[in-house]
Image 1: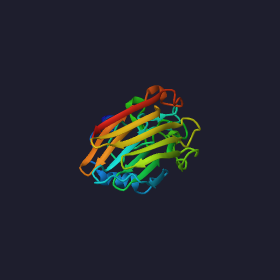
Image 2: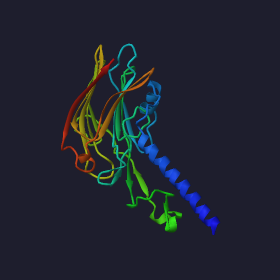
Image 3: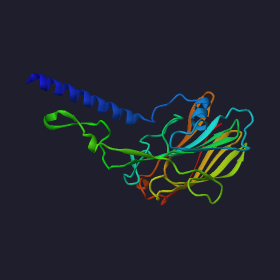
Length: 266
């Protein structure tokens, strides 16, 4: 029956094109420059709290005269699709200046106002253990594409982030602002996903401004990956990025501390 073969061939070609398009998109995600400025960053980091996330905005004395330094962001993400030994989903991306890129948590300093925004994203878990996404199509018998039955499709569950606490001794997700003035912002963080009771990320982040340079200092757990972005009125620039060691992708966290500094001309 030529008609059936032609239809099957057409479906297979369409499916291949769709898969290739998705894979290409995943490969390029986070690798391409994105037009973004301080206004876009203000909306992303100081706007309404995203669904399932936790966000706290602190007013500090870290107001920089002149208003030219924009918003400086430390943002942390899991580059792989899966994390915590497959129990959670990561952000599935590389370094990015897109203010709306997926992340696990972020710290944003608006140097014009002195406001500091801390945001923790919800966790997403694969509730039924299936790796077939909703409406997935696979190649069935005789090469004919078939849709995966709904009963075995993956069911993702978004679990809201734990509440944010501010100040020493607070439960995760905890932030402690050690210093905040026109020359620098210094804080500690202790964060935990909202699904399993392991995998805390503990660290110390410093953002600084000198007459000639913008600086970032990070020490603590080398987990997860991080990127440091400055959003000014003329656009965004990546100040530095920190890959996540593969050995720490999962529940084994904190076995290799990090102590790094990045600088860029002001």
